[in-house]
Image 1: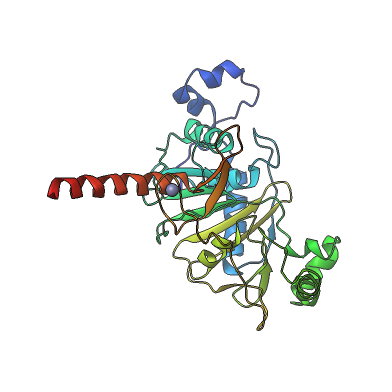
Image 2: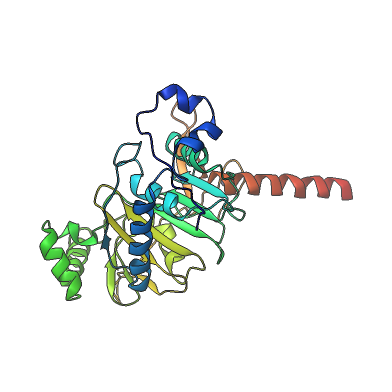
Length: 313
Ligand SMILES: [Zn+2]
């Protein structure tokens, strides 16, 4: 938890102030931008969320200097949890260099001064949109998910009052029916990302729009997994070593995306989640790792192995 100094915030600073550099920005804002009351509330709600795995806890979502829908929930969790000793990594769909990820990490660095990294193993706090890093996480890490729609039952019930009741009574029959009807109609469960999961055998949870590929990594995770939807004002969590199971039927098992016969054209890896990209005007397509930092690591490892082989000849 960060050491903080209570300083008056000045929300109407001229934009040049931000360009002027981080030290002065830090002087004029509370540590990590949010006021102490906001951080305290979010941390309290987080404790409740961790105590009841998968249960959505409402909180007072603050206005942030980015638009709702661009990661305000994840950003509020990150700012409430980050301390001077943390190392931050932000990814967007697996990429460290997308506009959303770059802007969020620049902002957090400006208001905290923490170092940034792209290395999953080095980071202590990782904020992510729509992916879980390929490399395994460890116990001293926090993974913060940006969540657009926290309610897994929204697919079958538009009323918030009714979905709350369904969670309270653990009545998930309509979700099971939805999946069953999908199989009857299409011979496939058509939910791709946001695949509903059962947490700790009790709460149905929306894992944010991660691909099915990542769902298995929620189960018995070493790291604490935290989810926050800023627009919908909900926080939920999966503590370390918690059972997380995707909904599936005995005779219709849960399946992940199939990349059979494809591998990454940059690093040659065949065991990671791949993005299909168009490489030229003729529409030629290729596959590359979605996790850019992992791809770069594999590429360097491959190059080093080639060099060693060359030396031994
Ligand atoms: Zn790759």
